[in-house]
Length: 183
Length: 247
Image (cartoon, rainbow over all chains, first blue to last red; front, side):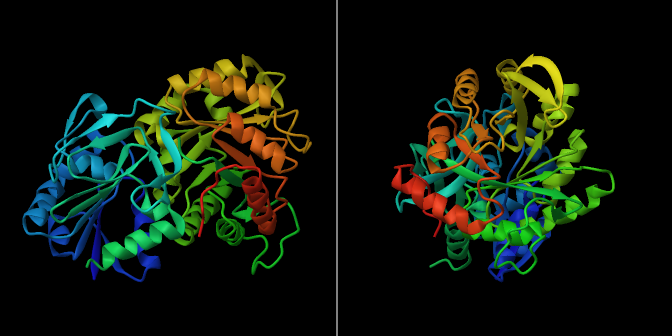
């Protein structure tokens, strides 16, 4: 199974790459539309700001490549900012148009300490994963929540998670393993 | 709120662990990756690597260390020491660090915090404050700044800090308990998470700190012994602190 990590200058490409490598996946960093198109699983990682990330995705033609993947039912995983970028819109940076892989928008967290940093349980399942975010998805495609916040969304062949599976120890590794072997 | 976090802190220089000699059961006792991996196995929620010398020569060794940690470990980690520009922070994040921490350099030039936050996102920027008698100190606590630790924490948050790592100089190394009063004052003044540091002697101290802060930095209490983290977690569990199930 070939895994391609979209490289748009985000900080955590190496961590996501290492996490898949630890699972013995055939994983590479991809910064061209062709590499995104041919992968069995494309991963949109994410750390940083929505506006600069979207600018690089567009500049490299990766946004179009991702939409084409979803149209062709190609499995695609968005992580943290990667989930937020996949929505229609984000409120970050004064409002940013997203890639549009699933309906919804990213909104600023208003409760508790922000950024929301730390391990928190995700329901259903009750496993704790590591979160580090100031914005969260509001989407009808939500499939799991953490303290009332969207933790996972599924829409067609897209799966997005607000937590960082690559930083979530054994629980995170189990999640990524499931992504490698879809039922 | 996310679960309270335990963050073992490793002092490194030129890519090696520099404090403590009681390493047991590790292949390479001085290798921060080996020690970090052992802490991770023992249930650490995050790790902090503090470059205590942060010399120019040590930069490449630090970057190499960060790369090896990111390759091996699946928990978040912060790197501190010698970050003076947004570019310094970006290179550490590219190497695999999740957060960088700044202290003296931010006191000398507070706009460094916003430069880092704009480039890396607030969630990646930890401002470390060494406090003595309520005052923020520079250069590992040796230099007075004339600024109150609480005011500096508020300003750091306004400038884009995503977390405050607060060390009480008076309590540090005493093992007599965290400075709860100061920690509570800072936690009340900011809305970002606060990491308490300095003074942990036992599980009750850590539990008390986690009552006012969102995380506790663990240094001398662990003595570079991962098995101490295992027992500490059990004791905290017994005291009703809701730690994550790390299995």
